[in-house]
Length: 370
Ligand SMILES: NC(=O)c1ccc[n+]([C@@H]2O[C@H](COP(=O)([O-])OP(=O)(O)OC[C@H]3O[C@@H](n4cnc5c(N)ncnc54)[C@H](OP(=O)(O)O)[C@@H]3O)[C@@H](O)[C@H]2O)c1
Image 1: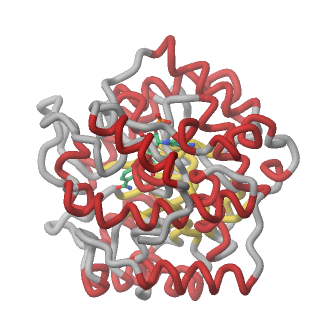
Image 2 (image 1 turned 180 degrees about the vertical axis):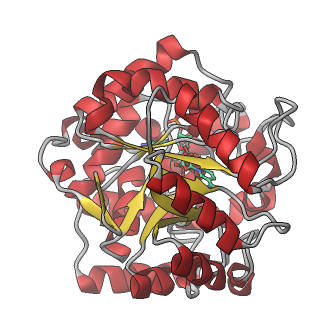
């Protein structure tokens, strides 16, 4: 197994794991942790990236885990508003939410947190599910449902327009042209500014883009989940569409939040992720060790390496790491100071391609909508 850890560090990690504790990056990253605290967050993150014609900070903030219960119990507004406002102070202008997160509570949180700086930030939200029971139901993108959903979103977000309005998942009963046409009307009415799609096939992107310009496609993309390299990124490039990467630190794994010794409780959403079965995590430790090796090389933290790699793949990719901690947000912005040379990227590519990944999507899976 390739490892950037010495034996003492490895066994410290294993022992803590056996005790049922998750080892955080600080325990493992002693040589690099000072840097994460001192990373400059002022200059590089003021430079913007373009998603189509929409300008955003090069790293956004994914707000889902603040209230969804996906990776941690829902946190209170009192705890999370300072995290979101702290991100604004650090220069982050791009905030990601969805009506299904909560449901609804995440948009309420984001709306309240960003209300005082509404004109300085870009708010992205997503529709596409039937939430009439107060729970996530089936998919629904019918025009009347979509219009009603947007009214609710505007209210919760305390705004008169959604900067980037995504279709979260396609509805098999509604042609994508019809969804794009409804969003086009909403844009004309000033209720949305840009149109986005999430987890869709290249053909769906093309069909939608013909009806209404697509500004961004959002899908999972990281050092581990690279399936979007099959046609999706190229389609975006060809059409001038931006790409927003969710899961860029592999839901915390490449931030060293958990490891092969960790066990998730049954209700934790991570327990159901196919690439986090005990067998899969064991196999994926090799990638975490590789990330540590590069973290040492670059005086960075593992999460910064994971994010810097995503940023280095194409200039129109904007990762939106999710966090409930301002110090993680600050650390993540430090990725903007990490640069890889061409030969380094080639070396990383060769290394990651040798690692046997378990539980990830097959390349052909992206050719149909998720
Ligand atoms: N379009 C879609 O279908 C879709 C699906 C899922 C998510 N999303 C969006 O994408 C966003 C990001 O994706 P994600 O949250 O699933 O995955 P992610 O960003 O890869 O991982 C989030 C997890 O990583 C941890 N983390 C973040 N920075 C860290 C650091 N520096 N060190 C250690 N751990 C760190 C966070 O824990 P802490 O809270 O402890 O920092 C959190 O548990 C979401 O918030 C959501 O807005 C979209």
